Image (cartoon, rainbow, N blue to C red; front, side, top):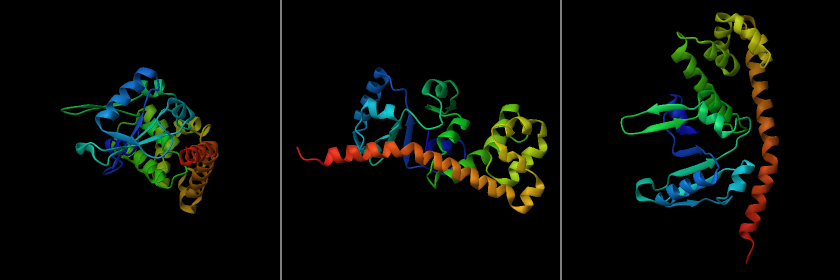
Length: 230
């Protein structure tokens, strides 16, 4: 669900970490523990690997010690702001087939939703993910793809291009993304579209900051408990 997924969708060149969205039922968590033991993975900092912390929306961080994966960091989550519960993510997943393995990855819309955080590094990645989708499939504009592009494109010129090519889809998408009213050549030339895109990003960043405030307080509490002497 992280950088590795972005690589598979053609929006990144590499990623040093592995981010996983998992189903938090007891059997699945046991399977994960076994896999982490094989990798000689240790928890990094806080929180500890407990279901209640995953259910809160926190990520648990691991560092692998096995010689064949030495230094690899694995981050595990079960809940993310603005992202559907795991069963729906699984139903919509994308499967990448290779000669020797199969990888199950968040669908592109779900991956974009998961990347809408307050972190600076996520927004260029969102832009590249949606650009890659459009530039790869613009000759095959299914209704689902057009709707996705109109709702998620962050590149002003491409957003105007899609809006002009599919005016019938704009009216529907505008109900959820009012800034599409500015997806015109005139607004593009004036710089209005870039301004409203930035305002949209700032608003989403603020929402994510508010979401994380209680979670950060919980992390601070756990750090304090960890440092407290016996």
